[in-house]
Amino acid sequence: MPHSPSAHQEQYRTPDSCPSHGLKGFDVASAVARGEFVLSLSTMLGCDYIFVNHKGPHELLQLKRADKTIRELLDLLDTSPHQSMVVSVIEGAEGKLNFIRYDYAWENRQVTKVSETPVTHKDQIDFMQMMFDCSTSC
Image 1 (cartoon, rainbow, N blue to C red):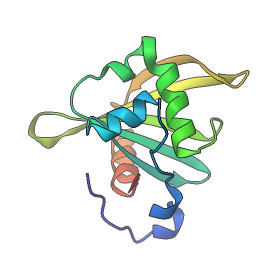
Image 2: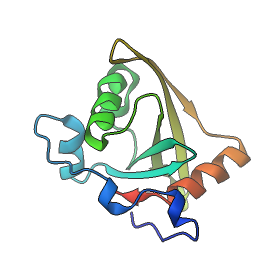
Image 3: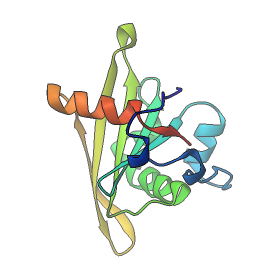
């Protein structure tokens, strides 16, 4: 999904700062190669917002598998586990975007305690929409 340039471009990563998905053996990279995921990244105030755009539910984002998926995203995009937020973006009926935030703990170099939180409050939706619109495809 293309993203338009923003007047606040200096706050966000440039296309050169999104590493390649060329790592073999990563399920996330395979999903990107098959067109199942479109990844984009936006940075604001030291936090990397990793957006995973997809259609409908995806097995890699189910809670039983989310810890490995989040770890792969962090590795593929070379982002800090302490300063990253993973957000699922699902296009619903009539083009409306639905956001789900994945909260996690980083313990002993592993992703643990993953929970998903649908973004439902209007102010939060507006913020996520703005961050998504300003994100750079990776």
